[in-house]
Image 1 (cartoon, helix red, strand yellow):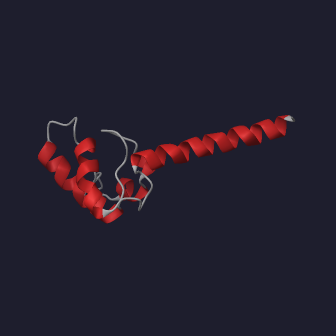
Image 2 (cartoon, rainbow, N blue to C red):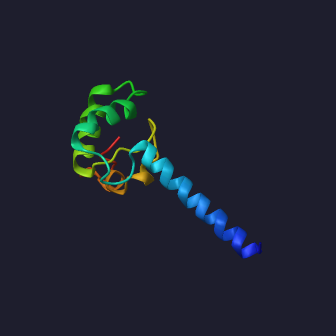
Length: 95
């Protein structure tokens, strides 16, 4: 097996791993149904002391983007719409 073949196989494995992670977390843009937003946002907002505003804005963002990033913080690269929606002042709209 040549070096090029090994690199190609490794690259395919990395891409496949990335897609599996996205699918497991429902983070593929447009992959959620609106009724799934509440559960995803509960997980997203589970570590904050400000649960009500977090849930309000998370559900608003999920309804628009049909995507919630995995984890309780960060990972917004998985949901471009969620990441790019800003407030009037230019801050992040979605938690």
